Image 1: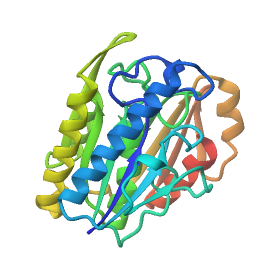
Image 2 (image 1 turned 180 degrees about the vertical axis):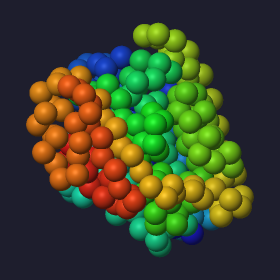
Image 3 (image 1 turned 180 degrees about the horizontal axis):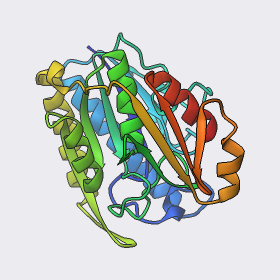
Image 4 (image 1 turned 60 degrees about the vertical axis):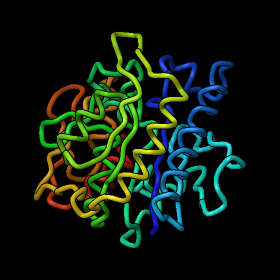
Length: 265
């Protein structure tokens, strides 16, 4: 069994403030360690379920957060950024049996995590077909395009609710809840236990039932915090500026949407 894990930090247990996600800040190290532990727990659960090949994308910030010395020997880890539009699921393809997410967070424009954002903090929100879109949604539609099931997610409870709307069969662990600028988190030790067991159970289940339906067409809407960015990116082919700070892009081809976000987000 070949599985893919994409990992972020704003949805790991306890992370609450941007200093805890910033490599240059003193608070960062312990949350990078927690990110590593949660990814390792996911890997151990996958191995117990029979995975013999595990790919991990370090998908936060510089792409250099996970302590690779802590990972099992059958793990291939992708660090840094290639520049490919698949971004946080770089090198995902049809050969994978399942995609999983660790440490993911709610979408920009939502209030269920103090660190909510979508791809960048320079935008207020990203919407697809009128709904707030998270990094989970953006990349799960890539998985749908490739016919790869999305079987597991850990992160904040707001994102868990979003994921289950896409497919109620996805196994989830909501490690924390955002309340204004605060979080209420389970203990780090418990999160590791639940992630390991959740991943194991997800991979032993009916993988096909976890495939996400890809819409037939797409309307991408991006609202920028700075109107100058909206003007600048309005020159991307096919983009329409619908207000001083908001752009719209329509397509029937999801890769074209992803390619657009790669240049205008």
